[in-house]
Length: 325
Image (cartoon, rainbow, N blue to C red):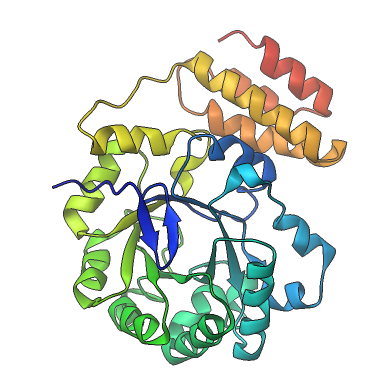
């Protein structure tokens, strides 16, 4: 059985494959998507944006949604808990030219959940249905939703939400195999994803959680029977992971990526950052992305220590170019 689908359809949207790149707050920005789009994942999601800020035409929110044509297929992700705002916000995403719009019901951070948004919506499954209904009614592009398995171990309700999302007209649901309480601690429980696959009739189920390699993606498909996988932290410092996954799903071996490959990719990524961000932000970003690409190999500890202390973008660029691996 071939788990790889080329092409893959989300509703009417024709995507190159069924390996997706997640919206990662503070990470999957414009330079990140410049790096990842060349490897052609099925869809790349922008960082989540607040519905209320979008409909207020907040300029910082629109900047999070910057993209160019090379990034298609591209998805926008909304976060918020007000059905009255959901339709207008989804329509704005569609009008900006996005291929897919997603509802975030998975973000675990307190500043998002405190008003019932993000994974806070897991406590009110019927409200998820109302919000999705408003989004589906407002747009022609496919509407998807991303959830966690439940708020905590005593309230696992992902199967119920799968059915609610299907009834509301969502074409796919991404299920992260952790609870909100877990955040990113401990292993993801893929059995919860399998439960959602069993509960689904027409809605597609996208598996998420601990997909860090091609072999992990294959294991997720085999374990859960999901229709697609969403790669999150596995994309950080590995913009090519979709190709690793495609290789494994096609019966080939994963390619060997060297430290020099990683350094070259980091340099290119940082050059994209320099072209897009101001100097202060570019310096902060160097500390962040530098540790993605050269994070666990022997001999890179000194690099990570140095990149985390750079005081200017020039210093960061010089270090990336000249550090001896």
